[in-house]
Length: 615
Image 1 (cartoon, rainbow, N blue to C red):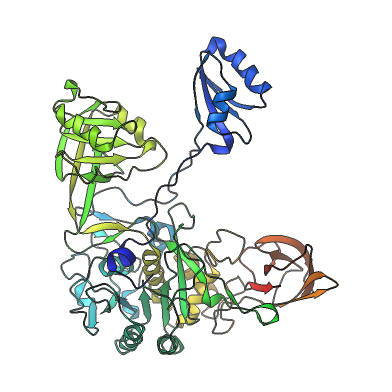
Image 2 (image 1 turned 180 degrees about the vertical axis):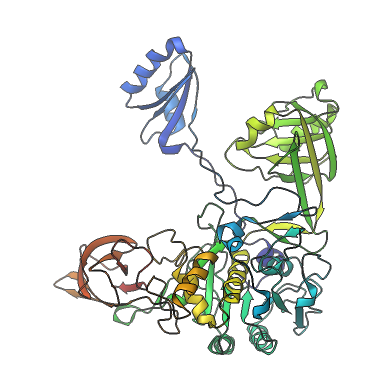
């Protein structure tokens, strides 16, 4: 992350925004009376449409390359009632937080399930300690085992146990929030932590602060350093401090950054530091997650090093974790006693009443008096919908999204309403409509959501502590290799700049080390800068031109199958004999950058590191 103002860089940088919705594949819905549908369908086909769903009072059709206004102009027929975009709908989160109020019960965040951390037991007797370099930790939060937590103040930052904003408390909760029936649960519940507060009142620090902090982490006996921070430009003093910690057997983890570009941030960009990107609950890369290249240099001097780019990812979008006391806002919603996912919009309070469906609430309605208004999104502002509910005597409002997903919104800067209002997901609309009563609660909370590679980084740090606690004989580099060797491949096959080796999986890494020992097996991962501890095979790539054509000589060692698959820029170009060499011929004029990877036949995990050639 950038070393900038706390509010802009360390709290909210990279928060995902909803993308604009367009017609899916130039596909539209045409509403028409059933007795006239045949005529209109014939007209659509004559105009080149491909027909799809034939429903009651409508049909769906694709018009290749034509926008909505063009289709409306073509289908100028009096029998047509409406033409609208046929929006794509997709399954919501593959992984989800538990439902409920973290102030009243323990919630397991989705990233715990996604990373398999719930399938591995943390060994508190193994002596694991994570050093968290951040903005301090709020001592009032009840979700930490305070006897296991120590800390240091850095110059000008104040006490480590007094927060400098919610960022550091949120990060620490993801690593080690206790399994204690309240709040959230961390990746390594109750793990020993050493907190170093490096950010000043303006929310930034210096490379020298981090170099000094690394030494303090070592003196405190930490196994892992976790840094959800970053900035531009390398610094040899800082780099040497983290290299020393790693060479002494530790593991250093840092955030890739939240600017959604290919810029390399530091300290994540140092070879001794494991760079972490962020994914969401659907196993998709976060649009803010930075993706620096693994290569440097040009032409024959180009080198590839997977330790200077993203190595793995973890959940970092809308991550629930600990906050300083009362600094977050939470909401809960239940219908007929069944909890539903919800989001807080405005106005604290708690109400329980019968439900009244108010449509899009474009006018007052006396029938809403004394009831919770169930309102569809659309046509007028959220504020005006809630204001009409309240003016009708409504005691609370639930606004349901009109597109896939949860409705996250506010009532604006000039909110004049006072009844509690929450958002709901489009997918829950039918169940909400069928309910008789609703209960809404909005209030301050010690638990809240944040997004960023800052949230993915402590997840990986906590997972490393969790896995390492069951294999304390291993080194930090061996844990690093195991996490990469067993990550769930996402994006392009094999290692890519967005996911690295993929999404971390605690159970898979634990099983891998149990089966293969600390030195690892022959199941993927990559050269981690400390030798081939992950058991992967090696690859070299050399590019040259001959008579105007481009060629790349590939040489590898260590593959065990009779054939291998060769990938160029993430796409398989050939399956060839495992004779340790292959020459790729590239057509077309001009230059270009070409990334190569060799995998054992049929595998996307037993692969070499990625090598890139630039012409």
